[in-house]
Length: 255
Image (cartoon, rainbow, N blue to C red):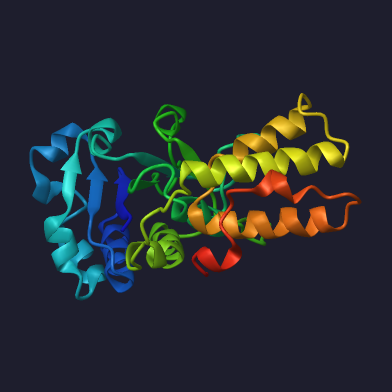
């Protein structure tokens, strides 16, 4: 399962920390990390994390506050994380690593970026600094339809916890890669069909298709074989010997 830590950077008000803890517990999250100025790390009770206001807003989630870990810097809060996701009020520039919440969940569900995730929220007034954003592998923002889009910190935490909670509490099936003989036979079949369609093996699109075939899981070979065979059957003079060695569809696991 994916392990997601919620990281709050220098929250100004204890009420927001407590309400964020409540949002986390409601959705099943438990790992709260708070980046606070170094002087407050020496005296945790003075920080906004465990004030009476924070506990009041936590409303039954004080265990999240009590177990929250304090860090003097964002870098130290992220040392055990594989992937760091930084939240922003809006998309910044034309970054290719930007994902709205729904797309973020889809990306994380693929598990290609690691299973220990940090979701970082910035200050209520100014968000994350450019230096802090440089610590993030990807960024995300909640699309809002308003002339002045604004969400409270705890509201943003709730949106993301709700969106990502299915990732943390579902059992992920282990990846089953296709065996090499099957991939080799499938590649030969695909190469033959592409050539007969007029795609030269040296073309970029042909090379890309062949590269992607090599990354297929076993379950995906079923779909790829069905598509290639459907195309091949519509071409004159099909040579089905190109697919020798491929498993028949009944031998492949169903969805």
